[in-house]
Every structure is written in structure tokens, then in C-alpha cells.
Amino acid sequence: MKKSSHTFVVLAYKESPFLEECLKSVLNQSMKTSVIIATTTPSKYISSLAKKYHLDIVNGPHTSIGGDFDFALNASDSHLVTIAHQDDIYDYYYAERIVKASNKYPHASILFTDYYELRKGKKVLRNINLIIKRVLLLPLRLKFLSGTTFAKRFVLRFGSAICCPSVTFNRENTPKQVFQCDLKCNIDWFAWEKLSKLKGNFIYLSQKLMGHRIDESTTTTDVIKQGIRREEDLVMFKKFWPNWMAKTINHFYSNSEKSNEIKEAK
Image (cartoon, rainbow, N blue to C red; front, side, top):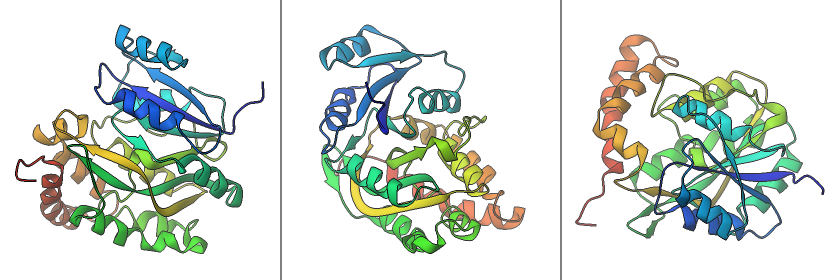
């Protein structure tokens, strides 16, 4: 059997009510792609969905959140890997557009798309948070800048403008350990900062090709409530700015945490 050039590795954790919707979206792609489930919390619930959709499960030991992501990244033989978050969904043309871009830019370390938010089952295509991220990503729309350290780090200097579940890794151009760190919330920002200092292009596709769920039950929302994110944001800002500037930016950036709140008025 020929090895697939692209694999969705669905990182399943405990019993997400959105896992099946995610699985359906990655199985319903315009091109043939591989799909497997990776988990460090095996359960009957995950096994039943794997059986229902005839998917293989790869079980691994839980070390940390970053460790779980690195485990998922290396769970397949494909050179292109999308770590699909169990709460999110992928549009019909996601894999096709990513693979086509990878063929055009073989030196890419990561390829990622624009996205929309899913709030209470509804698509949110535009809000303050999304607009700011799209502005920060403008340099990467110029593909001749996508391999420069300046452009790669610019999109990270004021916060992580790269949506983690929208990212596909070219494993031929990235180290095996990308996410491993002591952080709980900003493991993705940590990963992009690490990769920004290495060779490899950050290829940005401006089409909205996946939906990122904002929900009270997600890990991101949970760590925001615990105040962990604010502490970790400061850690990351210090990688780009002097200490006094990092603290100033973090003060204003903390207001963006409100965008993860689910307000009844909406």
C-alpha cells in the first residue's frame, strides 16, 4: 500500500463531545488522505468512534501537553502531518490546498491557513481577535518573505497569530520534538518561536479552511480561567522584547483573553 503524503492525526483526549464531528470533517476531504487517532488517554468512547469509522488508534504515554503533541506529530509515516484538534473541524478543501502548497514550496517547515471561529455552533468569520491576527500575518502573504527570520518572528512578536489546529508540518523540515516544554497553554506559540529560528518557510494560505471551536469546556478556556495564560504570555513576550517592553505588551494583550469567553448575549 502506497504511503500517503498527508495524514490527519486526530489528537483525542478523554471524551470530547465534538470528536465525532472532527472525524467526519477530516474523512470528508476533496482528496484522499490518511486519518489516524492518537491518544494518551485511551477509552471505550474513543475506541468506539475509531471502530465506527474504521480508523487506527495509536496509544502513547502522557508526559505533558507538549509531549502529547510531539507524540501525535510523530505518530504517522507521512511527511505532511496535520495535528487535528478534537474540538475543531476542517473544510472540504483543506488537505488539497495544503498539499498543493507543499508541492509548490518544498522548503516549508509549516503550512497553515486562515480560519473562522465556532461559537455555540455558529461560524464567526470576523471579530477583533481575528482581524488583529490577519493584520499581523500580512508579511507572510508575500511568499518571498516567508523564509526570512524577520517575517516569521514578526507574526509572533505581539502574540501568536498562527492558529495551531490550522497548521500542517512538513516533517522533513522540522525536528522531531517541536512542542516539548513546561508550558500548558502557549505550547504552540513556543513551537512557532522555536521553528522561526530554523531554516524553513512559514507558508500562509489566506483562505478560511478550518473552524476553531471556542467553548467553555476546551483546555484553552480552562487555563485562561486559572490565570495560567497571562503568566505564559509574559514568558513568550520576553523571547522577543526587553523585559520592560514585554511586561507592557502583556498588560494590554491580557485583554484578548476575553475573546475566549462565551457570552450569553451573543
